[in-house]
Length: 110
Image 1 (tube, rainbow, N blue to C red):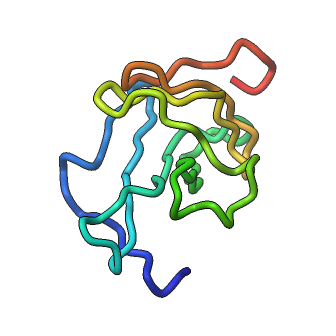
Image 2: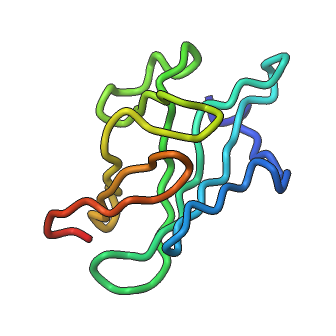
């Protein structure tokens, strides 16, 4: 899967979610038309205060081999809304993407 991964370098696919969070969408080069399968999620590190980056995958047919707890259902593509809270496996940062904006989770890892 790694050899077909292509970061999409287009401003329209770099989403500013607010509060120091961005999501750069990516797809696969062998898809036509290119299917967006996930994104690089940049956010403040909850533990150390610097920027952290994590990969998140969307629950689309191309990602069926990825473990369920690493995939996120997109409920609305026009106003990006994810179906469940997102957790960074590096730093523990947790929250939601609703209507294209970041919403912190009310737990201890804000």
